[in-house]
Image (cartoon, rainbow over all chains, first blue to last red; front, side, top):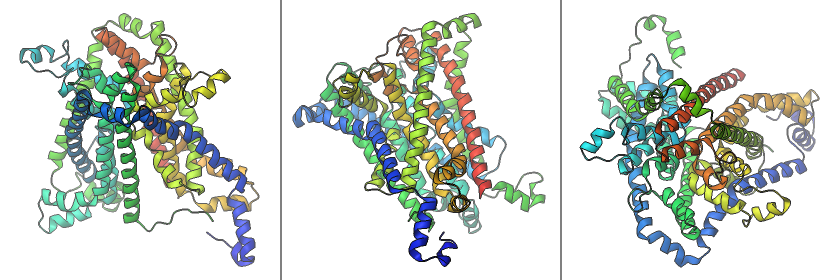
Amino acid sequence: MSSIAVSQYSNYQSRVAHNRATSEPAWIRWTLIGITLAFLSVFLFIPLAAVFTEALRKGVETYFAALVEPDAVAAIKLTLLAAAIAVPLNLVFGVAAAWAIAKFEFKGKSILITLIDLPFAVSPVIAGLIYVLVFGLQGWFGAWLIENDYKVIFAVPGIVLATIFVTFPFVARELIPLMQAQGKEEEEAGLVLGASGWQILWRITLPNVKWGLLYGVILTNARAMGEFGAVSVVSGHIRGLTNTMPLHVEILYNEYNYAAAFAVASLLAFLALVTVALKSFIEWKIERDASNEEKLSEQ
Amino acid sequence: MTQVITANHPPLRKRKQKNVLPGFNLSLGYTILYLSLIVLIPLSAAFIKTTELSFAEFWETVTTPRVVASYQLTFGASLIGAGINAVFGLLTAWVLVRYSFPGKKIVDALVDLPFALPTAVAGIALTAIFAGNGWLGSWLEPLGIKVAFTPLGVVVALTFIGLPFVVRTVQPVLEDLEAEAEEAAASLGANRWQTFSRVILPALYPALLTGFALAFARAVGEYGSVIFIAGNMPMVSEITPLIIITKLEQYDYAGATAVAVVMLVISFALLLAINGLQWWSSRRNGSAR
């Protein structure tokens, strides 16, 4: 990076020349940093701080009372249940899709990749709507479901389905590029040495992509626990039965029970902070594992 | 990658490249089955449901003034939000890549917060601070700026949820940018602004545009964060996803689906555009090296 200038001028001069040429004066730097931090404060830091201050506004006792109240506990349980079903299912799908797409060549591959991305392009409200059209009273299976006394819409299965839909692409999206980049030489070597398909998957492929996998699972989990729009359409908002945590927040808020609404919201915000922290940790791990790549650093 | 392999072994390409790894049928079969059950078949239900309406009925449903007003708000606010994010996202990426300041690592990590924070939480938090008695609202309202319960509130919410997209698409490109190009520009007599606008910015355009499109696409479908802050007044601050919900609650399934189909078609067009952009962007970055 230090160019010809170094050999021609003294060290000090060259450093000044270098700084002037490819960096900005200090006042511009600090102005830009200031504007950025102001922008992020308004849109990130202050809202985040507001969640916790509003939650604790009426004291610690009210805060914990809002969290252990039966409807809140039921909402927390349902949220955990939906995530506990959606995350493993999408994980298995993600691994299968990445295996097929990254290790094999076939026609229509790019179409398949686009279709996997589809749920990201669909409004959460529409994600809920389509399940109502299939499983609702007037839906395709509506009559059959009533006859057999199953409930999907306005019940837990509908919430789980909507959650699966909105978190569908996350794991596959993380794994596909990663497994494509790693090629298939290691798997082929395993095969030559007599490993079975499952052994190759468990002992070669998955360990190679473990951080990417974890990354995908964390994103899936965060979205699964926080989904609002899609779940709102299929839930029916029955307290204690079909309310997830975000829906419980909405109900409390609409009842002007702000302290309780923000108390439950603070749990979700805490989960988001943990998610972001884990994400950074994994990125750091991947970076450290992958390379001694030099980062573009100034000065 | 495959192109390289096939180019090296032209005879193998003839029929099928022989792949010795097992599990192709199982993994692809499962992928397509699961994709169909969860995504494709339910989505097709929306299009099939619309055929219950005649075209005239469909057209009337999706062009009533209240629905048209909601399109204008949804797409207008999404465009403004994505535009704000394009400017400040670029600035944020620049500051995070080029400068150092205390707490930078934490700031960098927190940029992802809108991805992780449930939209309902974002909605009530933004409403609380921008309401007339809120931390920011109580400063803005004396100046005559009302944010909460107005279309401006919709813009604020959509800016929040789209915030990470531009930063995260521009950041890696900026990190990979070769310093030599800037040094060359400087040695040829360009001042810093000229170097930025003529050398750096053109290299960032594809990523910037991709980030803008992603933020826009996300904003168009957004529901949770908006409904708390918008006030949801018909013709004024009512977004299209809310129209769908309202129609559903009135058991107007065909009407809800008609509006949903309009949004789906627009979203799919956006998805295709984004894929095209990303392809363009990766090609530009690839050939730049």
